[in-house]
Amino acid sequence: MKILVSNDDGFRAEGIRRLREALSTLAEVTVVAPDRNRSGASNSLTLDVPLRVFEAEPGVYYVPGTPTDCVHLAVSGLFDHSHDMVVSGVNDGPNLGDDVLYSGTVAAAIEGRFLGLSTIAVSLNTSSGSGRNFQAGAEVARLLVAQLLRKPLERALILNINVPDLPIGQIRGFRTTRLGFRHPSEPVVPAKDPHGRPVYWVGPAGPKNEAGPGTDFHAVSEGYVSVTPLQIDLTRHSALPVVQSWLEGIDG
Ligand code: MN
Image (cartoon, rainbow, N blue to C red; front, side, top):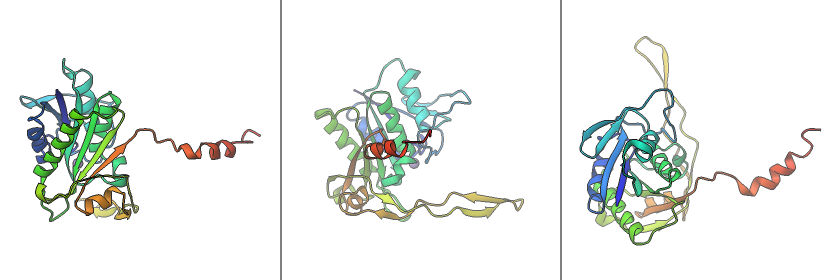
């Protein structure tokens, strides 16, 4: 059993280190992760420059690139052996609702799925002043991987996991959830560079909007681990007939 661990927080991040330790009790673990924080990188590949791989220590590699670069490289050519599973995390911050579209954590898992592997993305619901219980996040990941080994799921599923930032003993259990929605993000934050020229910071994600029972937001706020099965197909199947009739007569 060989597990590839990655995430977008960079190879030095505590969440990756804790995850590696926890999964090492179940499998042979290799870490391939960006050289620095690339949170928000989504499913981006670096195509304009070649990728270089550096070994930090045996079994831990870092790449000046995106999380998707890392998983792509690791699964399709960097090693002579193959991996059985990709586990991305433990991310420093939640990936709830629409966050999954921007998330490098989820993207690393999606890339594993594209390449045919079982994948899990694990995020810890940290915020300023919260406990930073990465050990709990890693332990939750270990429980889920062990469960996957006992009871495999269809490989097309990507499991998006969000863990309340609590000690493991205070987490109330697991909930299967759907994605909620956030309000639109906060406006950009204007500032000045040292030469007085305007610069802008992308503002924080919006507050939760659709976050009622059954959503990932709700489960985590109630102290449960949220487990959301994701799919790649973004087609809005229910809109196909609407768009088909809307197109009628377009060419005169
Ligand atoms: Mn991150």
